[in-house]
Length: 283
Image 1 (cartoon, rainbow, N blue to C red):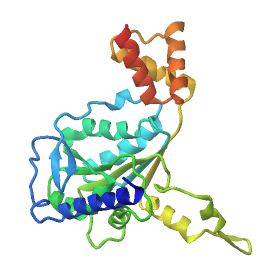
Image 2 (image 1 turned 90 degrees about the vertical axis):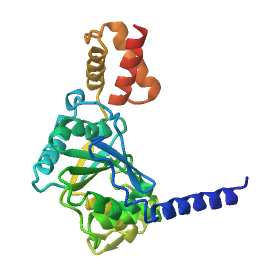
Image 3 (image 1 turned 180 degrees about the vertical axis):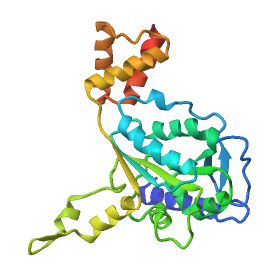
């Protein structure tokens, strides 16, 4: 199949998905709110996720400041006080997604609920807002690993929903998004070349302003950074204890953990968990 045919099929598939979400009956289906504390938006309806990831805040090490900022914001939200939409950005595997999941486990008993939405489904935001409006629960709309090209429909939908849309956000809804990109969009050399200098002033190109404008609409930015070797080993020790082994790394376990991280090109929390899981299984 030639590239042109592949492109046409992809566009047709995207169009069908968008048409399915516009069907009158799709968004009107009321979910079973008592069935779960986490939901996924699929084909125009909320689907309960009863088997949710059970990670806890105490399991997330060496990101104490990030935890403090986001937990404080979430606590304000759960208590009905003003709170901000949150953008979590930075290195892969450093706990961005895990932190959002841990917050649900921490505050679900206080009425917090999580709705996971893929970027293609962000065009359905008005439907989701209408579904949760007036509910007593507090909802976090969760967008994981978010990034856009400027011509994607979800980009404009999210930008308008955060600030500028006629459809007002319900007081019981916030957006938490994670991304490896600070500005959620790819950056190119051409963007910088188009920057203009007027006297001593720098005027960024319109393309740069456009890319910054989306991330600016999140009230709280929280950055995550690569872990040092000692931090990585501390996380390894934590997960070894979790799997029932000693957290005191002997030289063999220490060297194995470091070799594991070198093979994967990362000293992240995710890599530490994967090593501990493998080591515990072999032990």
